[in-house]
Amino acid sequence: MDFTERLMALANKVAHQKASLETEEATKNAFVMPFISTILGYDVFNPLEVVPEFTADVGVKKGEKIDYAIVHDEKVQMLVECKHVGAPLKLEHASQLFRYFAVTNARIAILTNGEVYHFYTDLDAPNKMDSKPFLVLDLSDIDATLIPELQKLSKEVFDLDSIISAAGELKYIGAIKREIAAQFKEPDVEWVKFFTTKVYEGAFTQKVRDQFTPLVAKAAQQFLNEQVNNRLTTALGVGSAPESAAPADAPAEAVQSQDEVEKDLRESSDGVTTTVEELEAFQIIRAILCNQVKPHRVAHRDAKSYFAVLLDNNNRKTIARLHFNRTQKYIGLFDEGKTETRHPIVALEDIFNFSDELHTTVERYVEAPVAS
Image (cartoon, rainbow, N blue to C red; front, side, top):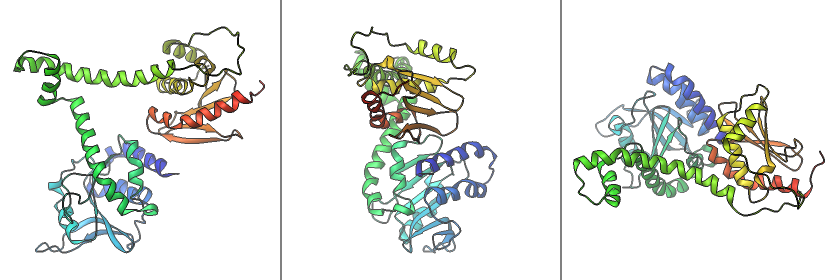
């Protein structure tokens, strides 16, 4: 498995097993050691790579231990402090990280409960661990944009300079994104006041605040939903595509609505259950290809093991396959020899990352149509 697949596999394990873990030690064995091994790529049973119960005397503090020290190029590069899964990650409960960070070569400190990982460095002051993480990885809700940055920490491609140089931007972008997410979920007074005074001319009294707080939250959620819908709607309506494979006088066909597509799929499935996610992914692929072929030419057939997206409803012209009937979702793409390669996706929006491959596949069919 590649890096992303290993990360998704661990996330799936955490989701299914975390409820059964009752101690910090169990968390380390079940989740943290596999993270160090399968994600970061270090041999947890080799003391030259991973030192458990790492001890470094600090001033009057003698014999204090940190859960793991990760060694690269014969130097301690990362320190790992663990808490029980589900426990809040608060630095006041991990004072060893601060102390050890100052007396070792480590430039990376990790505070984790096995599900959430906080990565720290020393951006604010040399050899002093920052109070805020530069990267937060939540295995229950993985941010795909962080995966390349996380991979830089792995043994195979460990690049400390690149990590540190990117840490500043990651730290503040991540913090801003988390703050925006928190405000969208539960807006605070200043956030509510900012938007209220933009649309309401009266004084910002307690009564006005109480009135506008739920309105701001509702407007924020609707805005996010509309951005997703507009991305698809706009894409479906742009430009006209070359139609060399279709007769010039062919009658125009109306594009099916989402309800019609869903009804058509379910009626033709012959016992196969078509999910909403498959339907949404199908519409995304239609949107991607709409400037190349007319949307009605992009068809679909559902099967028990995959959901096929076809050109002209021809199973010899498979554009992609969606493998969504599993915990880790994949999109299957085809090369010139019609060999399928499956690519893991975290969210449906990730399908947009494969736009070039989808266009290339359709281009092959349009230029050299396959006889049905």
